[in-house]
Length: 352
Ligand SMILES: C[S@@+](CC[C@H](N)C(=O)[O-])C[C@H]1O[C@@H](n2cnc3c(N)ncnc32)[C@H](O)[C@@H]1O
Image 1 (cartoon, rainbow, N blue to C red):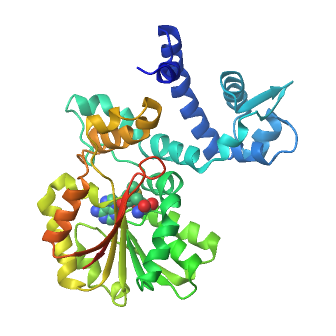
Image 2: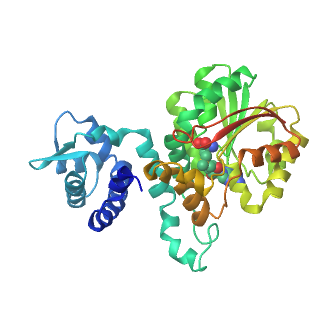
């Protein structure tokens, strides 16, 4: 193991053990303080805030807040305790980074309940989808902060060059692609579709804040039943589809099922643009080629989120996805490959 990896994991047993404890508690506490608005209040403050001031502003329990802030100010570099008050510390701006918020929303907010079900799932006592499920709104928001905000704009620019104007964003989450398209071009309209009403509510809220909600409609629909939404009136004038980070979920039912879904698009929407953002399969050696602190994010997505937590199985290689698109009769126009670190998906521009 490289020395910097050793130091990151903890270079003796006590450091290794205690970094595990500290990471676990920090994730849970930061998530609670973020959702309660305490991190935002600390970020806005010009001077240190007392616990009572923060508790009143965020309407939270002052006793619990005091313990949480004391823990974090003494166990991390992001906060400081000044007398009886608290302020952001030397690394306080890390708490405002989208990648930090995305991590908490996804892993604690969306998949926390699944992580709690790990033991019963391991024992075959509980099954994802039947006994426990992730939180749809947190999944949508977490994906926006951790991944979609990074690749949405270049993808939107290319979609506009390829003529997209009335766009259906499928499995939309917060509808990153359609929102960015609306921001870039005032002529764009579209429909947001997801099976999670919480995700659609998040999409509507983000679009309202950005002033584009009036150019969108919001449609509850299931990607597994494309014939239903493709024939509905909201989709009649759509000239392009975009589907980011969700097709792999349908691999749960096998490649043939994904093929059936794509072929239904071929039947109902031939000739239209279809932009699909998808994860790429990584081998153990692909992971080994990177230092541990670079590989854990992607490892967690592939082997925790898509593995025990949702039983989705592994994504396909680029060749595997292309073969699926070809068998469905789609024409591949181009691929934007992800650089793995900043974004974890490749974007396929296809003609149905
Ligand atoms: C990882 S998030 C991606 C969200 C968004 N596309 C983005 O890139 O930010 C996956 C989304 O797919 C949605 N989804 C998963 N399976 C679906 C299905 N069968 N029908 C409709 N939406 C689905 C989830 O509710 C969630 O919003």
